[in-house]
Amino acid sequence: MNVRDSGAGRAGGDAHAEAAERAARRDEAVRGAVEQGLLGPDAPIVGLLDVVGIRDSAAALRAAFDAVVAPGTPVLHAFAVKATPLVPVLRLLGEAGIGAEVASPGELALARAAGVAPERTVLDSPAKTAAELREALALGIAVNADSPQELARLDGLVGTTRTDSPLGIRVNPQIGGGAIEALSTATATSKFGVALQDEGAREWVVRAFAERPWLTRLHAHSGSQGVPLSLMARGVAETYALAEEINRHAGRRQIDTIDIGGGLHVNFGSDITTPTYAQYARLLAEAVPGLFDGRYGLVTEFGRSLLAKHGTVVARVEYTKSAGGRAVAVTHAGVQVAVRTVYAPASWPLRIGAYDAKGRPKEGPQVVQDVAGPACFAGDLLAEGRALPLLEQGDYAAALDTGAYYFAHHYAYNSLARPGVYGYAPGADGGIRFAVVREPQTVEEIVAESGGGRPDALTEL
Ligand SMILES: *Cc1c(COP(=O)(O)O)cnc(C)c1O
Image 1 (cartoon, rainbow, N blue to C red):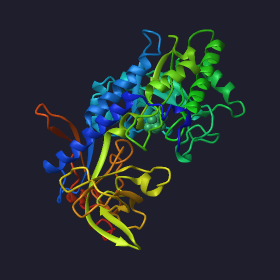
Image 2: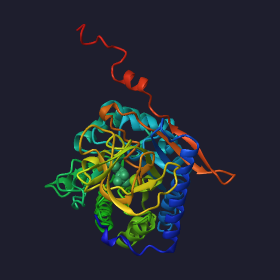
Image 3: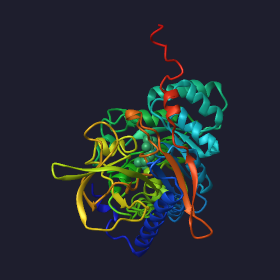
């Protein structure tokens, strides 16, 4: 999964310094978590979030687009909540000037609980119910219709309710997929948006706008992990060209805002951030200069690239063994916190950090070993055949770059508990401070969520 045209390998000294600082903060956090008892024999797995890193990424995102848009251009960066659906994270991003992109009633509720304002929220799901649409319009949240049928529903609502919601249509420029099929949103047969290159589709979209003066936005999200920057830029260029055509046809600036989605690739191979938001914004400015000349407001919806590198899941090595000549470390992190890596290891390899029982980076010769999880199936491996300092009983294994789509996306296999999630930041005394983001789930909660309050429900039916 190599992003060839991203500028990878050309990262400057700043990128290396940033990477080294992030790694140093992470090492301190692991040691601090052990010293302060967040992590240990009775709390054998935690998720950790780097508050400084999250703030830095939010600032980098804003600076990257501020550098290329005409002065005064309205820009909303809406964090794709699905990447890290945790209320304190949404509040932290909100304070850093980032809104929310939501795709379900649950995600909308999380954004509201974090205090994200309706005018900084965008609703995008492909299966919005009539009630969800009604709620969004009542709140004044931006909505992108995913299909002609959904647009027909909006027709009914717009005719009968007053709303401040900016409304748009999601299109699929069908520019093709990236390295990971399941995450490629702009293939010919993608389930998302109106497929622009299908027979008659483009004409339908132009007409849909002409007939509805209240439609003012065009949305496309054509990239994700594995999609190269050049392909993402093509998706944006196609969307821009369509907006121009619609406005020409309408004879006025009916479309006033283009939502370019998210999807920036994350480097899971090292601590270096590549590609960067600045590289992407500069590429867009070259490829689609009209997008930034002040005639269009801009919405972005980045998820993984804002959070991935700021999360670490750390798990205690409960036992070690040897099987068929292979060293195996049995840890408490597996499929419940790393579903994609466990089920699709070739697409989603994770770096593993080795720490000793005191939470210090482990030294020593590299030994090829498996890092296994606690779940009861053979494939529950965080890493297979990985060269690391030999993990021993009581050590810790850390799965790096797991701040998005990992420990915040619990998979309840074997009724394994959701780990606690803690944010960390440097304290005034030079030490490290932690804040609870999410309490660890208790076994009582697992029982209650699993029908524990109605044990006779079936026997008495
Ligand atoms: C998932 C999603 C995003 C975020 O994608 P990332 O790859 O995490 O940046 C943005 N917009 C929409 C519509 C999405 O479905």
